[in-house]
Length: 228
Image (cartoon, rainbow, N blue to C red; front, side):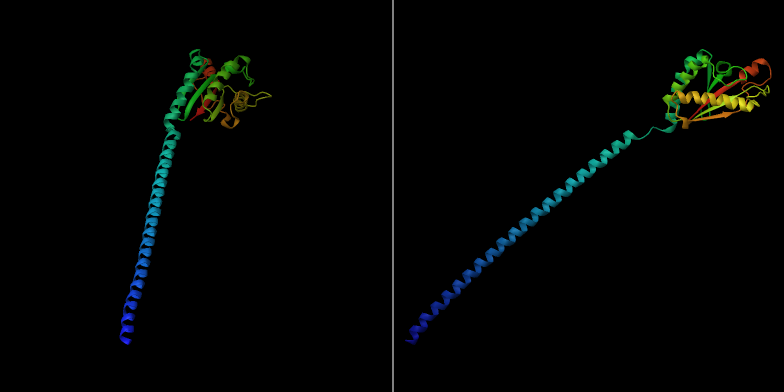
């Protein structure tokens, strides 16, 4: 009886171990599947991250290219070229007045000097603008409006004959008043006041040497210096 009981007990123990082994094998397969899933998800997320980096890099390059193009388009032209063009435009605008002998246009180191003889602008010993001067000054003002950046210095010049009246004690006062009259007129015609300055030179900068009538007539003038 014992032998038979023992014989029956042995197969039962083997079956238990087989059943336990089967359960262990199924558990190991589940872990392997889980690990594969995690690995696949990591690869997917890594691929998405790399793709996002690539898109960000492309976007950054596009912005840089756009900024470069914008900078090139908006970059100002060289100052020298711009100033030279402005001088040419002003001179071309004033050609009609120059050809009629109403003004002179001269290139100076820092700009263009427009000379207007005093007989066109004023009566002798006076600083009130003559009506005949308005057309000349209007065309000059229109030329100055084409270049709204350069400063404009208006200089009054007299001849060497002394003056002493109740209104003008000397040529200093007369030349300053004439320069101021031209400045006021240009402001009324739309030239920005901050661009303008009036200065009296009296007879200290003669255009022509000599004291004869022709030299004195040439030296009585207003010079409008457009600075660049």
